[in-house]
Length: 548
Ligand code: F6P
Image (cartoon, rainbow, N blue to C red; front, side, top):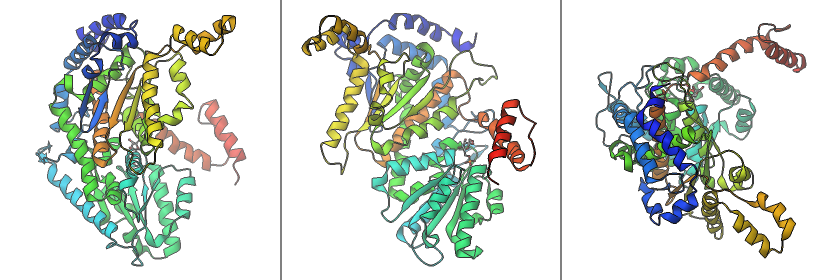
């Protein structure tokens, strides 16, 4: 058995779980009028209520013991001090340096990284100011109207999520487009709408070798040249964001038009780096800095607060409680704010690419579950789709409910109805509806006797289903920055407890390697026989039927 499972803190939680699992949240609320005050806190402008979780004070004490015994506090310090905690890639993990607003030195390999971080930020701000003001123009002297970010994964999901969430803060003249998939549909349908004179392309790729991005970038360049006919205009319309200057210049983008970042920024943590260029262009310097400021506030909270008052620590521990002790496999993210619709997709990469691991830091296979399946969409749509399963299905699915208090420019009664549903759902998940309540309702509706008996089991809601509620005063750049950093650090806490490397992603490599080989098979005439029977069969079916 692993060190984690035999640790005193884990063993104590196993025992404690036996006592807790029969308890119902209804009763816990009834017994403790202070439960809401006891299990809620505020940080970075985010109000976090975790009282609707299957916990008591003892649970939290034992979970904090687990955090202490697994070295969460020490590891936080190690990350912030630039230690190479990404051991399989021998890299520091320093997205926090990109929002280090107090500008304290952060040293990697004997070098303070802050001067170069700040220099790239200044270059981004100057560039984005010039685009926004219209001073920097396309080749015919017209101001840019459309910005196309070509990137995938971490070079796409953060910027697209933020530009959608903060539309109210975006520049009126600018329309943002994001192209990620390689099926051609996205890039072709995006390009159709554009005028080359007023379009800026940002080719965003940490490695600048990602097949999807480079293919889309080539298609965009061809589209541009077909219309413009002069290579020299590329410089005004194509910029790159990357760690790989050589590949950028080989692609044909002058490295003067490149915004740099570094290997100690993980792809899924890179929106704070130059990968955030589309965000800076759209929001402008002030609001972009506010976004960083929000994240910085959460960083300071995470670094300095004791475990017991530490929001990402509490959130991470609650996740561990359900995954490892209640057997929950998934985590639903339910934003009650249309602007956050892309937030679950963003978190999917952040969480699943970070903690979707089965080998621990010592190279041993783990004997416990690690990262969950993260999923979700706008909460109110979910109510009319998958919430049935969440209320009455056989699996326990912990849910994060996220909403903002103010909804500027939204006419009533929309906000009131939205928020009524937000509160109603967390109450329903917690309380459920018991047999006596169901029978009373049926009596009132005049359904009695055997008809009532037949219906009762179907109408019972067990309840006792855990939820976190996050309330944000208003969805601003600063609050969104804090929210993103909250989840980043929650993932860090869980990775630390599970003793996995949350900062590599070897699991994405195999598919990439095989795709390269199969690309050759698809363009070679004749039968393909080099794979297993199923893969050969599918490839050959495709080759027989694809129009040539
Ligand atoms: O394939 C996964 C991945 O490597 C992610 O980790 C990364 O965010 C994405 O691909 C894009 O990579 P790049 O920015 O190097 O193009």
